Amino acid sequence: MAIVEVKVPQLSESVAEATLLQWKKKPGDAIAIDEILIEIETDKVVLEVPAPSAGVLTELVVADGGTVTSDQVIAKIDSEGKAGAAAPAAAAPAAAAPAPAAAVATGDNSKAGVAMPAAAKIMADNNLAAGSVAGTGKDGRVTKGDVLGAIEGGAKPAAVAAPVQAPTAPAAKPLPAVAAPAAASLGDRPEQRVPMSRLRARIAERLLQSQSTNAILTTFNEVNMAPVMELRKKFQDSFTKEHGTKLGFMSFFVKAAVHALKKYPVLNASVDGNDIVYHGYFDIGIAVGSPRGLVVPILRNADQMSFADIEKKIAEYGKKAQEGKLGIEEMTGGTFSISNGGTFGSMLSTPIINPPQSAILGVHATKDRAVVENGQIVIRPINYLAMSYDHRIIDGREAVLGLVAMKEALEDPSRLLFDI
Image (tube, rainbow, N blue to C red; front, side):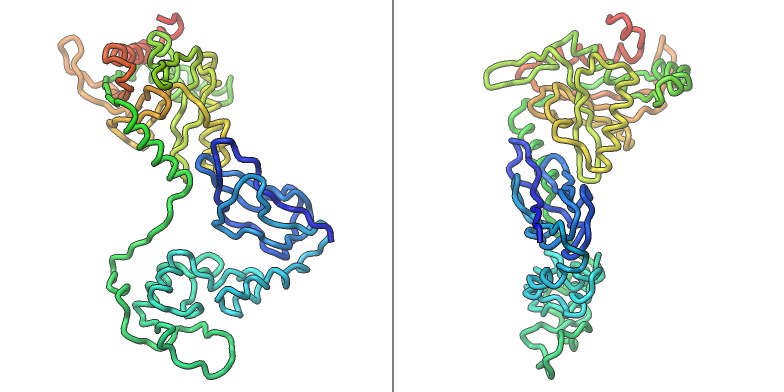
């Protein structure tokens, strides 16, 4: 037997620990080299852990949901083993678990009868024996809903359960009904308590940090998007044919933001103690929604990027965010951010600054609205822009003029060509 250890990848210096999500293999399974075994969640990204060797998975050192650190051993592989050989050994630790014997005996149902954390707590609070609740979750796991349903149905607490008549495996069917305990009073008003993911906890921490350390103020303006829309419509086909990607609106917003940051450098600055750090580069963070929460990947040196470069990079980041494959280096840094709530239909919002940055632009939904031009009421596609800024270093003058510069660049995109 040649044992190969599966270890946690090296985490970044700012990440002390991570959480294992769900093992994709179980002991006794044959695996191929570089096959993904599990995903590890940090407060920034989700990392995939590939198999360092082909062989048979012999042991899971850390179970689903476990907390781990860099280089920690989480599993072991027998590089010379055959599938199924490790199954008996892997079943030994499971013997201590109160799962039904019939569930443990089958490969795909090895987790059948195992209660999820919230479900296990309710079962313990109500003194319900393991195996008394049938699971309907993934792989037969017992969910909170299963437990509440059993309680409402009158599942019997273990302390008063009928004596076992023979030394057989725990019965899979519910025990005789008794008076429902207090938890049944939830009735048709169920609740579910789930721990925050590391990313969500990190988002909460940073937002509170931003609110407590920055003197946040927001300035607003409205933009007539007709010129951008006409330009986009005119060149969309040729742009797509030439660059292999569609011309969206975000590249215009990025270009307009960089244009304004060049004119008012303090909008691109950050606070470090009692110092103001003026950045001579323009790394623009683009807020992207993902199944795990809000992430902000960075467009490095956005001032040097073409419209096509920006559109391709944003599309790449969007895909990675949905797949949970954004790397830590892709979300580290940034001198200014843009949040596009318009994607979800937002009319107006006050975005929160992403520390240690000092300003953020909020973009919203473009809608036809009645406006006055030359004394006449006309219909124009209007977008409300909102820029939140740190009033400790950015005065209202720079903030307002900076947003006006973005407005002017969007209403007359030719300004971007001549940098005026």
